[in-house]
Length: 396
Ligand SMILES: *Cc1c(COP(=O)(O)O)cnc(C)c1O
Image (cartoon, rainbow, N blue to C red; front, side):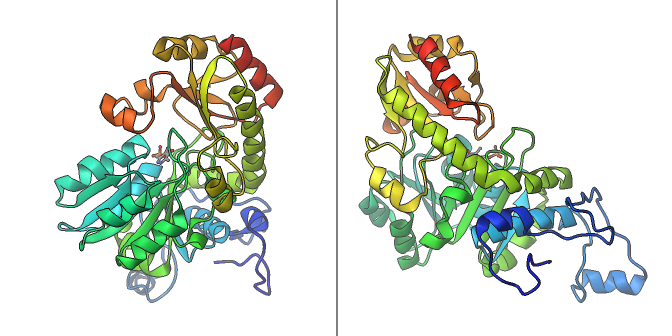
């Protein structure tokens, strides 16, 4: 819709995150207006007919599109460097829609196995019910990806860094494998955010976010978005969303739109703090192992630093004493709150084995490195000195 500069000059992502997608009303408001409307009125019946036939631009129904939702999509498009995007009600609606709009019975999906619990359900349980077979591989092993490609493989799917053990997958290498097979690479980029990692520049075809996490960043609203090339959106996703209806509320879109203005600042500060916290944890006698891509001790530190600007805000670590030790430690925290959410201004801690990944068998958990003593910490925006003191007190 509206371009940020009158002469169409290309601006840096941080500037687009503040101005991109702004569509001012004749009142000339500084801050973006919120369009809480389900429908739209037309001057004449002829105008309604033209609008429905796509002969003139404009909105017809907020299940299909809405000015506030479109502003959020446009700001994300500028930030990500995508051709187009569609927002959804949640991150899971974004993942599910991206898959279902493109796949059909007889197709095959190849995915990394270290996935957010619900993403793993979609790939492992839901798609096969509709005749789409799937294979899960260790995403760090490029030969495993190559060997698992089948003639009917249509989508490769991955998450990096992964939840919860922060494995890193080489996006560029997997994109090459996907394209050699005539398949699309879809990347769930939630943990890295568009600030720290830009999968489209590395060869991915589709990028998916739960906007619930760092994009909102303050734990208020659910939302999601799929960004891709024009063809994927026009030929597959747009109509799927229009007919099935997992639409983002304009109120939530407005919250997300305004949150993007501070995303860059927040994410870089989150990462600085997470690095300080992980260095502290690594040297503590109460922890067994610390997983943080920004630490040189991370087995894929070099790969992480080659495709990310910083290590992100998520840290996983093993507390001594198994489940009992992890529970005792987390129950003793005072500043850091117990919650399965992440990417919030408030630091949040969770025990994946009994919450987000309890659905998996003990063997599947062991395969992913999710031990009984493992906790996942989403480092917030508090003073890192207070976080370190809180962790130290609870570990001792
Ligand atoms: C939270 C999350 C999702 C799902 O997003 P919702 O907004 O909760 O539906 C998907 N992938 C990852 C990596 C997530 O962290």
